Amino acid sequence: MIKIGVLPFNPFQENTYVVSDHTGECVVIDAGNYSVREDNALTNYIHDAGLRPVMAINTHGHVDHILGVDYVKRTFGVPFALHGDDRFLVESAPQHGALYGFDVKSVPEVEIDLKGRSEVTFGDTVLKVIHTPGHTPGHVAFYEEKEKILFTGDTLFRESIGRTDLPGGDYSWIMKSILEKLIPLGDEVRFYPGHGPQSTIGHETLYNPFVVEVINGEVKC
Image 1: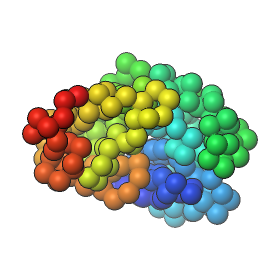
Image 2: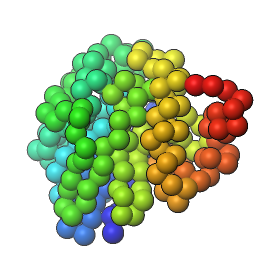
Image 3: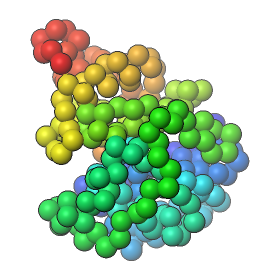
């Protein structure tokens, strides 16, 4: 059984996830820790739980999701995995970050390109990599099939979807990603988004206005 630590970080309240299993190995998804206090909170969670990070993995490259990646890499000596189509966002993080008041002093190197990669593993756990462009070109979701747990990043939120008006965003792409890749996973799938509370796929097919209007044919994508 996997265990999920949820740590909302930085002024955007971005959800950083520490995902572990019975082996004690873990991955850090979307490390957004920005301050010394947040760095310590992440480290203390990992140490107190007796975990061994093996990788920093990201759903996408927006600055609020990568603020703590370099810290995780340096502190735990792990590689960083990201879809290559979002590399440009990481490389331009200092400029984009400044627009939102973030002082990005270091840009993490991407050692593992998730483009074309079907899965990432830690311990006895397999996370399927699902390409879900729309919020960004290289956005991915991570899916644990046995327990039906999904990490959606900024593609799908509880009763909302990610922005598509930022560089590389596209409304038709994000809706196709949701309707063709995430919804078919099943109503019982519980997902953990990049911001806000968790939800289920079933809930979103009933109450997410962006999803419902397309399903009902009110809006075409």
